[in-house]
Image 1 (cartoon, rainbow, N blue to C red):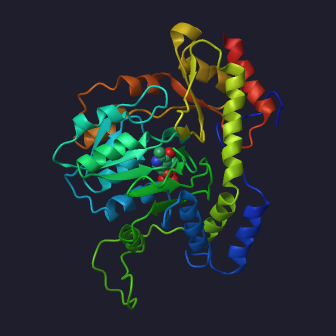
Image 2 (cartoon, rainbow, N blue to C red):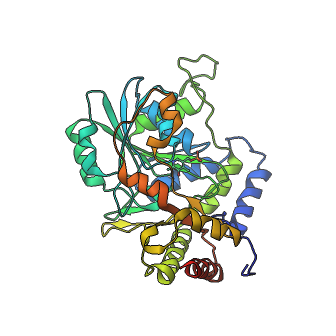
Image 3 (cartoon, protein in one colour):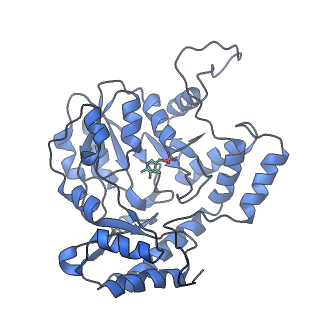
Length: 376
Ligand SMILES: *Cc1c(COP(=O)(O)O)cnc(C)c1O
């Protein structure tokens, strides 16, 4: 592991014996489709963990967002507030339905959507606010809930990076009308590909199940009569088995990711010009990834130089997301963003995340930090 030339990936899954055991159980049951018992167990336990009533497992985090939008019955020409500093996934799901994403700049510090900039973007067409808890840090939900109530908007929480993250003691996935998670291989818990929706609203949960299941009638005979356009967004029993095994170790994974972040801070936080994503007093950041920004004036090297330098030493990093204002697909969808997004532009141009696997060793963290120090 600590061989000097060994490749350190930016993130890889942490898989063990429990995953193998549940996987075998699923296999031996002969249920390799979405039937079998693991989906239900995963849905119930995960929803319970988030403090909500309903869980709906799905094929990935992007289909989870798409179903959330369908469940809320958002319509073409509606507008939805989204963070400008964001992955493309939520805006994609909106584009699938002809809905217009309206980006809002990020906060310095925790890198989430700036609640103070939301109200000026609300129009008569706005129907919802999609918050995204970036890199494991939950958004400041009180002012966002205040605006949602004031303008009668729903809240969609994209919690794909924030399993177990907390706001004032409550968990991500419990603040929105509906919330979505991803179980992609680099997320806090994984099933390779996979995802899950949480909600307290039984009608929304029913609608998610309906659209996820090719719009087969929910109750009544399976007679191949379909009233709406559906999808097959189901998670297989095999994937759910891995996800459940991972979920049962979630507290361990969260404390490992937090420990990785702390080890990086201890070693390089004092370097002038390197800034870490913060953890607000009201938040528990689960540090899905340990993100930093580089201020070249102070460090003497740029983010791009650091990226190349580490890559040459077999250390993989990843740039922070490119802002929605930089996405050609927005232009192709007819959305021309004239506003400035100074914070998110800074993150796009100067941010990266360091290797952040849950099982990353102290030797590897030392190697990464010593490499960074040697550049100073
Ligand atoms: C990973 C991710 C998704 C998408 O999840 P997939 O399972 O890859 O489809 C959505 N939103 C955010 C913020 C993510 O990081």
